[in-house]
Image 1 (cartoon, helix red, strand yellow):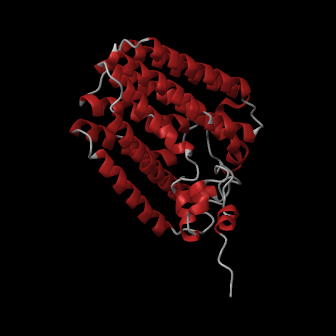
Image 2 (cartoon, one colour):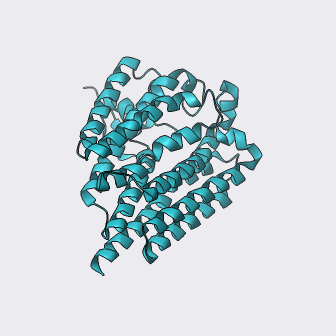
Image 3 (cartoon, one colour):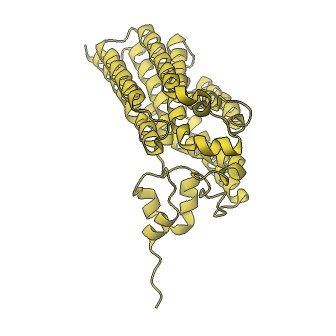
Length: 319
């Protein structure tokens, strides 16, 4: 009698360099599902965290403006939507970049360049994830629905930007930070200065952390002709990231002031800023393992800011 296939062995065999060690979804997924787990980046949850956090910041800012905490139903819906749309965006990115990925050491093992998933199957999976995201979006008001749909153009062009500009991280920022508008739009059915400023904060934050992430591929990117801010900043990468993070903090200052945030909101921003300083001090261009660690640490940075904003709104509701 033949032995049953070892799921953990299958998962380890196809684990990618930036996968989370011992990821639960990789360990539990049937062998046939592993490539789709990887296409959606479910084995790399930092992606949907970074897409989600600006939504939560914006929802919490809206809560402060209303004299309450964030709308927790919206918080839950944003979580579901972020996982679905991060997966859809990643699948689209991998479809567009499958030939380039085959020439980069860190990405050549991905499902499409390695041949474990066909482009047709990936396209069908993309449609399924978009359907989930659409159902979440339709749960909000008409203005929020229109605002969410407006982001799709940016998402669509992002994979091509690394071929034509040294600032693809800025285009990623425009897309990944979009939640900074969505939380406010879902709460009020309109936009205002605090929402625009928290969106700007998230854009600069994204450029900074994705520059750190791009340090992992700087050598291979130069070979295959891919541009990035990591290559653009070169020896000055620490200064470049520091400038992006400084602008992010200044935009957050304007956003919090715009809703008359209280002490807990400012404490959350202070903790967020300290975390960003910690990252800047530890950047080493040649240390790819450290670059990945610092990039992933931005989940904690973003949660610190959200915790302060949410707590401030909830405190104002009971005082």
